[in-house]
Length: 304
Image (spheres, rainbow, N blue to C red):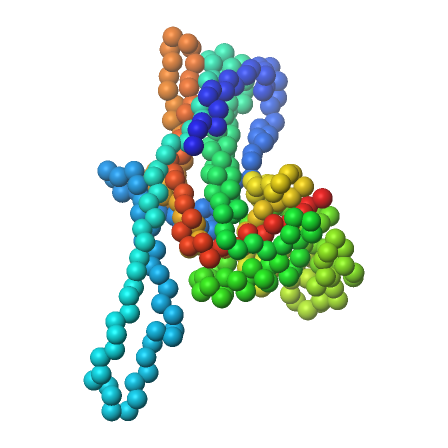
């Protein structure tokens, strides 16, 4: 995982002396969707690798029912196997150079706001890195030529249930997979549009998903699946396709260095007196891997 960039100069020009400065407008990426949806484990001091033990499933058919009078009979032992997935923690970082003149020439809190921008960029990169793993799930629903359908979510849910993936389930989708012209929102219409089935037509007033969407314009949960949207969801063959996913927390894992309270991002400043500037460095130390393949389902759909 390489640098997001090498060094970024923060230019003079936000707000000069002799002017009234309004609240700063900072253009943030949408980030930090993934950490709440996957298995996160901090590395202990002295280690840069986190190991995730994954135990095999034992089928119900392996359980023997003894008939009356045979309670003392020994049956064959059942093997319980485990595989370890090791995740190496690597550094992801970005830095910016803020000159003294830039700070002096601005009435804005330049150093504070620049640090927030850097931290947000690193968090967005983590989302992007881990969402790229959706394409590795063995199970895929939807097609590259059709819009998003309610049936795609239900097929994904059925796959997760069949493979004993523990709840809760999370859907991380591109915004246009949910709200775009080829999105899930078409299911609220009165007729099929872009391969939708108008699944929620006529359900207004039932107190369910249709009312959420009609009243607020968005949904947070469908059939017990938590709905998240992120522009960091990867493309399919091109930008007209997106590959989101529905998955349990056990599908993906990330190891990280905990800087306090579960925070995996640190911001440091370094004074360069010869250059009359302050260097801001933002680090995130993490690694990630697929843990249980069948606990995740890719959702591959067209968006335009």
